[in-house]
Length: 113
Image (cartoon, rainbow, N blue to C red; front, side):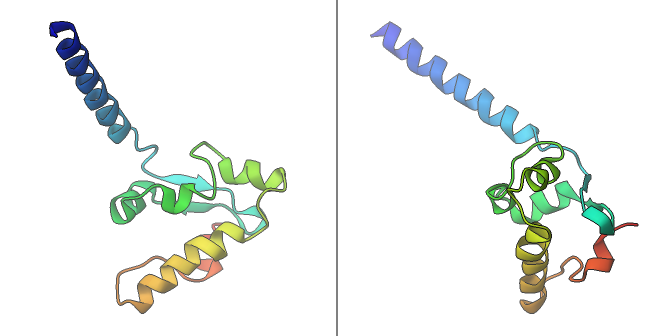
């Protein structure tokens, strides 16, 4: 019985540590996203995390790794403008329509030449 209790406690402590470590690993505060010929897109990563709360809102479409979008485009797994038009701009327009603060909704406001 003591062994079983000890195992349960050890498991609970391990899970608590794992959740704490995961919560702390939020990636870079700001990221530069590959933007093709129009120029890269500065992306306030932590601001989006704080607002959206669910990483899968974006990362269901592309991996959580440096240059993940660029790698997927080069491999032909993402079409040009797929992320920006189907995720970023779509979300920004939905937020604007709902009367919430939002980011840019046009290409030239995001891409940096």
